[in-house]
Length: 185
Image (tube, rainbow, N blue to C red; front, side, top):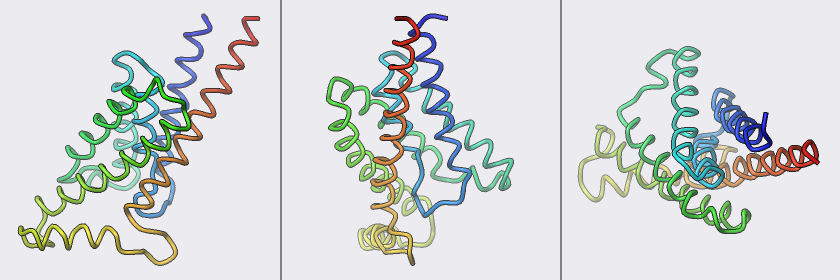
């Protein structure tokens, strides 16, 4: 197996493995979703930059459907979540020439805020918890900003989890790259 093929397959395995941490108990919105998309975009320069994160989401959603019941994984805002994943992969791809730390820092912030704004707007738009007025939208955003007992808030959790999981993915990728370099030397 060539060095590049090994690195590609190993990186895909890391991304998919991180995506499956969604099955573990976690704080609200403290998931690897945006990190998987951001890193997929940063680490691949072809269609895999979109396919790997989207397939990781589909597989982990399917696993959550099996583990927790199909209603758990499928919901009215699913399309918006997948759109955020694709947009974040595009963001990662556009940041691929940046230093990794800068791309993870800025990309994590942008994708976390973007995911918060889009998915909360989708909840407001498709749900019945909030009136379909500007005040209702602001109330929906306010609920997402509220602090959960001992577990942060929806927006902050999304940003911090993206930074954390993206750091894990990029560190694993760098270690795998060094390993493959030593194997061919």
